[in-house]
Image (cartoon, rainbow, N blue to C red; front, side, top):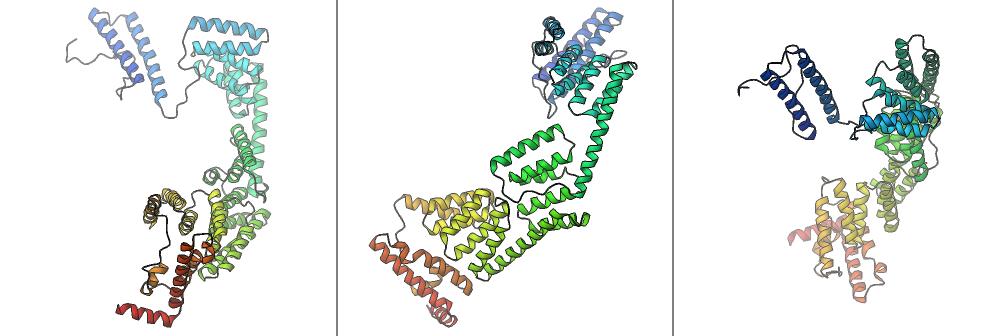
Length: 552
C-alpha cells in the first residue's frame, strides 16, 4: 500500500468500525490493536485480490461487528460511575463453563439449589455472555429466596437473548417478589408477546398487576397522609447516639427496599436529624413531597436545630397555611416563639451590661430545647458562656464552651472565647490550639492570624524559660489605657468590662498559692488596675487625666 494511501476501513457494503483516538491506556491500547488487525486483514485481502470474495466479506463483517461490540464495552467501562459486573476479569473458558452449567442442572433436578446456584455462578464467571447461564441461575436464586439476584440475572439474560421465554418468566417473578411489581408487569407482557398462551405468564401478569395496583394505592394514601401532616412529631426527649445510629441504619434499609415510599424518606430525615447530620438531612428534605405538612414540619425542625429560628418560623407559617390545626406545628410554633423571646431578651441584657439577667434569659432558652444536643444548643451555650465570663464566673464559662464544642467542634465563636480565657489563665498552649482550630474553620476572620501569632510567641517564650513572671514595673499612671488594654475613646461600658477581666485575673486570692514574690506583685498589679478604673470610670477624673496626659 502506498504511503499516502488512506487507511482501508470496511466501506462500500461492509459494516464500519469506529476507531478510538483518545488518551492511551490499557483499554485504548486494546482498541488500537483490534483496529490495526482489521486494517491488516483488509490490506492482505486487497493484495491477494480477494477483497470482493463473499466469504472474505462475510468474515470481515463479522470481525467488524465483534470489534464494534467490544468498543461499546470499552466506552461503557470507561464511563463515570460505571459499576463492573462481578464476573469481569474472569478466566473465560467455554468448555469448563458448560461443564458447570450441566452440573448445576443436575443439582437443580435433585433440589440441591445451593449447589446448583454455585455451579451456575462458576459457569457465568467462565462465560459471562451466555444468556442461558444467567437464566438458570435466576431459577436457582428464586428457589433460594434470593429474589433480587433472580431479577438481576433475568434482566441480563433478556438483554443477551430477548427471545428467551424462561428468562422473562424468572426475571418477572424475581421483580415481583423483590417489590418492583411495575417492572414485573412489563416483563410478563413481553413474555406474552413471545408466547400469548403461556399460562405462567398469564397468571403472573394478573398477580403483578394486582400487586402494582395495591402498591400504588398505598403510596397514594401515604402521600395524602403526608399532605395532611399525620406523621407523629419528633420525640421531645433526647435520643442517645447509639439509638440514633440504629434508627439511621433501619431507615436506610427501609428506603433501599422502598425507594418511592414517602414514609421511608421521612424516617431517614428524622434519623439524620437525631444523628445531627443536618446538612445531609437538608439534602434529603428535597426528596420529600412538595408542600406536604409532614415535609414542612421536618424542615422546620431541622432549621431551628441548626439555629435558624426565623427560617423555621417562616416554614411553620407555610405548614399552618396548608393545615391550620396541625397540632405538632402549633406546638413547635409556640416553643419557637418562646425561644426567640428568651434569646432576644438575653442579647438585650448582654448589650446593656446586665450579665446576670442575660444568663437567666439564656437558661430559659436552653430549657426550651428538648433535644439538648442540637447546633442551637451549642450556640446558646456560647452566648451564656460569654455572659458568665463577664460575671467573672470563668469556670462556668469554660464548662459551657467545652460542652458547646463537644456538640459542634467547628463553632468558631466558642473556640475564640475559650482561647481568650485560656490566655488570661496563662494556658498558652491550650489558647494556641483553640485559635488554630478556629483558623482552620474561619481563615478570613479579622484578627485571628494576629492572635495566633501572639499565642505562638508566648508559647515559645515559655518554652525558653520566660515563665510569665508578674511585671509591674514600668506601668505608670500615664498608661492607664494601656494597662486596661483599651483605647482612649473607650466607652464607660468598655472600661468596666476591661476592669472586671483584669480584676478577676490579678485578685490576690487567686495568687495565694504562689510564691511570696508573686503574691506581692499580683497585689501591686491589682491596686494599679483598680486605680486605673477609679480614674477612668469617673467623667471628671478621666477628663483631668486626659488633659494631664496630653501635656506630657
